[in-house]
Picture 1 (cartoon, rainbow, N blue to C red):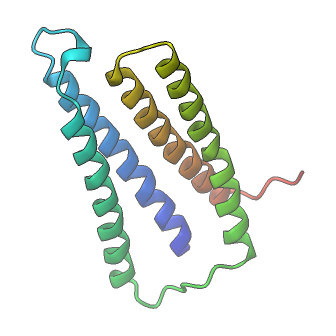
Picture 2 (picture 1 turned 30 degrees about the horizontal axis):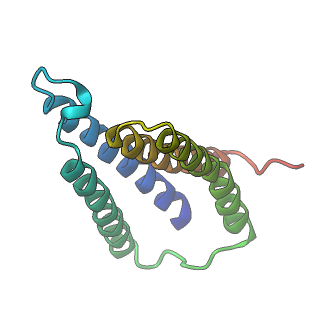
Length: 142
């Protein structure tokens, strides 16, 4: 398994754990109130910050465990990275457009913030799943 493939797995696992934890915390804070009244901002920021720190720490640990792993990216690594990034970026655009439309329509800030976070998580998830799948097979030819 290449270093880039390990990094894709790390990001995939961290994304699922961070977003799943965030959803569980917010749903646990409703206390019988409507979802839009649940305190979410701190949980959202903490889950994003924790995901960033967890990804960095996991990548450093993987690098320390296998210090002889090549840090050089070959053509295949670059192509897989580019493909995964392109696939994942679609959800960033979808989230931005959805948030803009929700803001214009006057939706509650809760929904706007959560659709942006959901689309960021889906972007990371889809992009890294693409990388993992392509690493297991071959690059598509267009």
